[in-house]
Length: 113
Image (cartoon, rainbow, N blue to C red; front, side, top):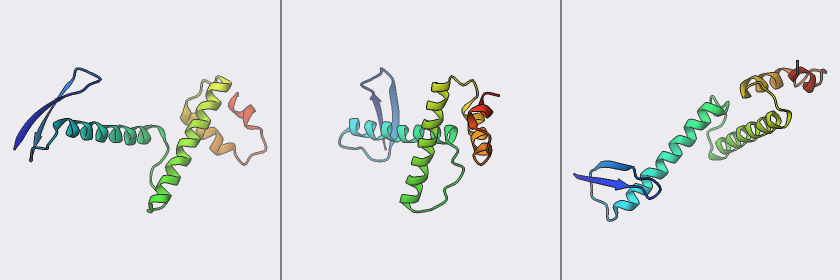
C-alpha cells in the first residue's frame, strides 16, 4: 500500500490518496482523479438542471440522444429567459411550455400573465 500527496497546477490544494499499487507517475494519477471528478460534477449538474428522471433506451445512442435533447431544451429556455428578461424560473417556464404547447393561446401571452 502506498500513500501519495498530489498538488494541482491550477490551485495550491493538495489531495492525499491511499493506493493499492504505486503508479509510475503520480501526476498522471492526479489527472485521472481530477477528470473523474469533472465527470461526477457533470452528472450532478445533469441531475440538478435537466429534467432527465430516467433513460428511455438502454443503448449508448439512446442515452446520448436523450441527453443532447435535454441540453438543447435547457439552452433554448435559457436563451428565451435572457432574451425576454423573464422572472420565472427555468422550471416554471418549462411547466408553462409543456402545458400550453397544444393550446391555441399564444405562449407569449401565457408567460407574461
